[in-house]
Length: 312
Image (cartoon, rainbow, N blue to C red; front, side):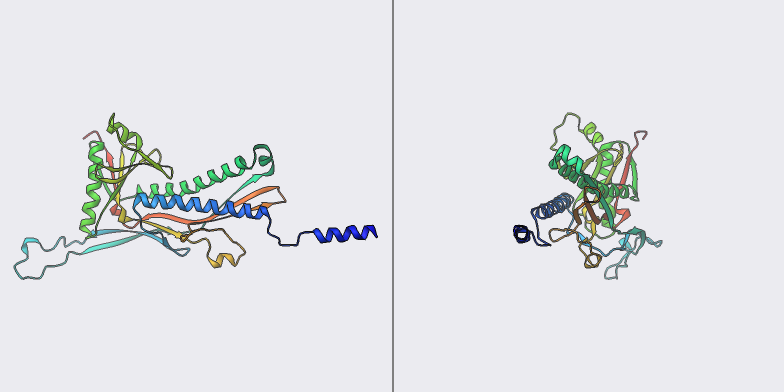
């Protein structure tokens, strides 16, 4: 009789299957925190660069840049057009250059139960989440810097000051010829070149999203101060903000969910998906990130890459 009463009591107090526990809330809050911080960082970068809203694309979308060239018959019109005569059009050829597809990128990390026992959850989990987030962001930016160096509007100047000035002038001139507006120009330069140039002069360097940048510097709306290997010394890169796009694939696509893969996303623009769970067979906490994110420029010949050549 006593044994039966004990069994009944155990059955009475046992939790039902599928109960959402405190641990579940903690994991969900961590997932939301991760994707929210990632999105806020990219929102800050878009604001600094002056980019409009990100453009959602389907997986496999081709990344295409263009070069616009004047046709062989040259610039038409001018002083040869008489009074009342029709002004002929100047024709340009636009040649596309396909670089590849926007693809989904899959990442994972794991934290062992021993690490949490040794260092505590804040260090073992939060610090590795922070590092994970920074590496994911940095990976996209590194590809962008590599892409910028392929700009075809190239030149060389005898000094850093002239390189800055001419890089800006070249992209404005190019966009004028394309009959497109270049409202603001952003620049990228090596931080050592900038400080060598300004010497003891005082400038206000701002830091956000891991960037160092100066606003309204020598006519640039923003000049980013970067280091090797992203921007080598003696190189200045400039492009109009109108030439920069941010493409992304939404990780919360319903087709992915049909596989049983549910990633936490946050906000109106889902730039990244994040999921965390425990792997009991290895006693580790796993984290998974899914994203398809590319910073891109529409016109390759709207990117000026100017080298400093002091042999002039």
